[in-house]
Image (cartoon, rainbow, N blue to C red; front, side):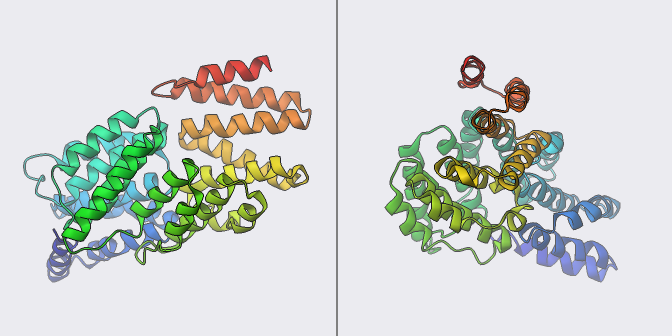
Length: 351
């Protein structure tokens, strides 16, 4: 299915009826999302959605709300602020009059993304189930096939079901080739790189990183790929090389979806080379950990604060270590499943 074809027709209809501003918003929001212009989206999204409601075009409303969720959750990982909106949009998109909208499938992915950002491993089973359901509705001719496949694979990755993750990615590649689409070189390939790296197969991960590309992914994909490359080197124990490959934080600050991977590379490099644990790098790790809690990415907040406990104790800063453990407890209370979080906190308190 051409996921964009209907939007071109609607664009013409809107302009013919004098709704140029709404048509402009439809064109702008995907571009602004992938290029990190999220502050702009925050300024015009409500007005755009209100215009769609005013003209009585629910499909346009679904499109705009979906892309606002993509901006807020997929790219900025702000599930705490958006999870109610994701549930609301899912209900709206699956009303009988709206189910034919191509973005109704994407809306299911939006909710899965919310759960993944909130507590990836803790919601892994739920994400896998919803992705399975979605896959039964689509085929590789849908442009969202790779997006949903990527979310499905990431859920398996969070569950540490690496073999199943790679089997799914192989299946996606086969189906894409059979459909004449060719292998995905973007989202699906990034998950494959992570899966191989986490299994210790770093040569394979590098091979796939060399062919990864996504011309439509904008700056977000470029920074995600660069950070993933650095993460592979970290997994292989090449900490200095990983640090050299890591994009500057000011370059990735807007792309919060990769902050966890970025921060882990910095943390591991600092452990390897203690002289790197200067005030500037410590401030970055503190900022990222605090920002994770504020945005509601609680599993990541828990882990990032565990790194801070380690760092503070190396610096013999007991007060800050205690503060980081308190942050871990707040995060642990929000998780969907504990999965060892309480035991981690207990062990740190006893250390």
